[in-house]
Length: 40
Image 1 (cartoon, rainbow, N blue to C red):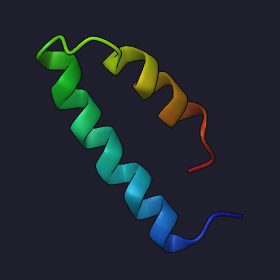
Image 2 (image 1 turned 90 degrees about the vertical axis):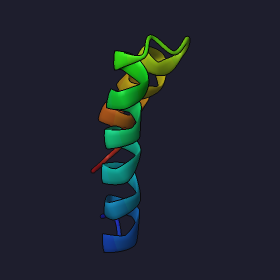
Image 3 (image 1 turned 180 degrees about the horizontal axis):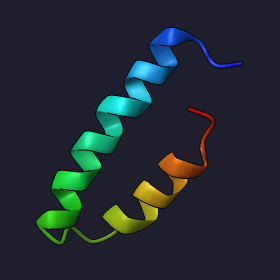
Image 4 (image 1 turned 60 degrees about the horizontal axis):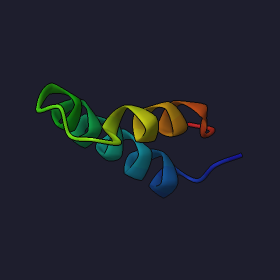
């Protein structure tokens, strides 16, 4: 069970990663995959 603060952090991280992927930042896709695998 993740806390509300952790869930907010993951949500903000995902939005940042989506921007990174649009800019083709190396490693962004891998980080996004890990963020999705993390319990949200």
